[in-house]
Amino acid sequence: IKKTENSSSLNISKRKSYLGFGNTLFAQSNKTSNNFDLSIGVGSGVTSPSLAWTHNHGLGKKKNFKIGYGIRFNTFSGKNLEYSTAPANLTAKPETIDTFRVVSAKHNSITALINLQYSFGKKLDVGFNIDVVGLDFGKTITGTYISAGKSTQQSAAPTKNNLLLMGDNDRGLVNSEFYLKYWINSKMAIKAGASYIFTEYTTQNKLASNNDRFRNKSMIGLIGISFSPSK
Image 1 (cartoon, one colour):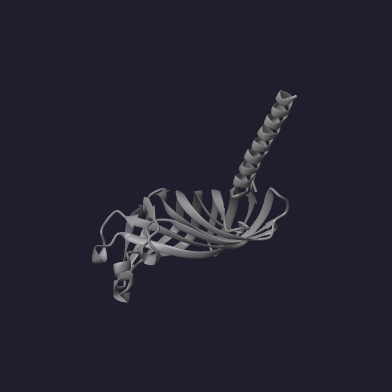
Image 2: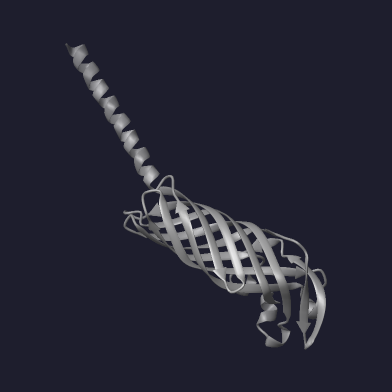
């Protein structure tokens, strides 16, 4: 009889352990989520589709605030755009700011991003994300360089290295999004907001003030969809 009682106690103890382990795994899975976003930004003469994956970690007791990281593929195209002197040490002085006009701009990039998000219940998310580091690639183009009232034709290509350094210290293509997401169900959401995107060309020649980098800043509307297999 004692053996039977001991065996039963051991089985109950094992079941509790398994249940406890399962609950721990379930709790851990609720702390994180993966999102796949397909978005498109549209503005005056500018179009910028993007595809992103983000891995978010819930913080706090209710896990409403989330911080995450991910990867984004950006494309950017625009017509008749003006690119201005990019380096921060030159943009502080109006007399050292020149213009590079591009009839047809095209950029493609792959970047790492960071994401901040707050969830209001299960239906509504408010968030912000921004590119941190990556690579930009595209074709060499010919644009019109304007300095001191004179213009010349110059060849340029997208600045290869993208790096977030804040403001005019940034390099290359840096995309940021302010967004709202409304979850239609547990897996799918619609997304709307704004995208603030920096793009940059590097000319083949060093020009006035020994500069070869020119930047365009575009604030555009944003719509998209989001899929989360683990929300």
